[in-house]
Length: 363
Image (cartoon, rainbow, N blue to C red; front, side, top):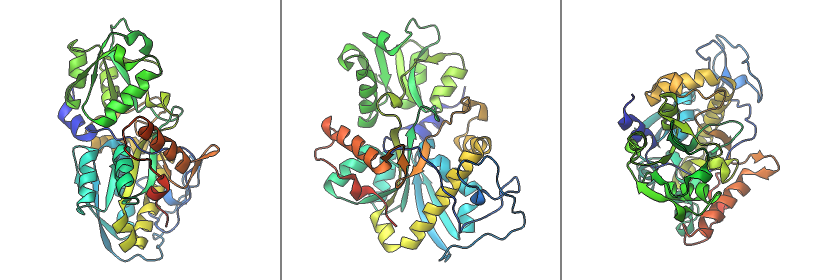
C-alpha cells in the first residue's frame, strides 16, 4: 500500500476553480525535441502524432531574456502540466529558470502568492480566488483552468467498500460520510449529495485526508469523497468501488476544479515573461493531449505512484486543461467561471458577488 503521507502532500486541500474543455492551440516560439525525437510544439489540435524535427534548433520567443520565475504547487491537479513542461525542457528552452516550491495544500499556495514569495500558483483554490477578488479585485490573474469533465477525466467520486450494500448515492441516506476538513471539500460534497437528497440526511465525519481510505476500510465510515490518485488506489486494491454518478460533474459538466494563476504584480512587472509562461503551458497541454501515456509516466514519477495507479481507461486522472479565453461548446470559459462564482455566492461561501472578468489574465 502506498504512503498516505505522499497522497496527503499531493492532495490536501482540494482545489475547486476553473473550467475546461475546448481545443488546444499550436504554440510557436518555444520549440524543442522530445524524448521520442519529435517536437510537441509543432503539433496542431486533434493530432495524435507529432511532426519530426530532429536536430532543429528551438524557435525563439520575441524576448528570450533569461529570467527566474517562482512557482508554488500543491496537487496533481495543477502540477501535472507543470511537471510535463519542466521535464520536457520547455522552460529551459525559453530561458526560464524555475524555483519550485511544493506545498501541502492550495491554501498554502494562496498564502505564498499573497505574501509575494511566489509568482505563479499551480493551482489556486476557486474559493480563495473568489473570496479574495471580492475584497481586492484583480489580485490574481488566471491564465489556464482545468475541470472534471465526464467524457475526458476520472478525477473525483464517492467510494464505498467493495462489499458495501450501497449501490447508488441515493442509498446513502443515514450513512456515515467521511470528508476532509475545509470549506472547499464541504461545498463540493454538499453539492454532490444535494443532487440526490438533503445532506442533513447523512452524518458527516471529518477525517484527515491522509486517513480517509483507512477509515473506510476499517468501517469507521460508510462512504468517502476523494480525488485522484486516492480514488484509483482504493479501487484497484479491491478495497472500494465508486458509486455511479458521484463525481463533481454532477454539479457542473465540465466542473471547475483548478485555476493556474499569476499574481497581478507579476503580470504588471513582467508581462513578456508571463506571456512566455502561458506559451509553455499551452505547449505542455498540447503534448499531454497528443501523448497521454508519456504524460502519465511523467506525472506518476512526480506523484510517487506506479503508472498503473493512475490509468483510467482512456480518461485522465488530471483535469482537462484549457486557456481562460477559450470556449466550451457555445459558452466561454469566462462565463462558466462566472456561473461557479455566482454559485459560491448564492450558497453563502462568499460575502460579495464577484465579477470574474477581474480574474482573467489578458496579455
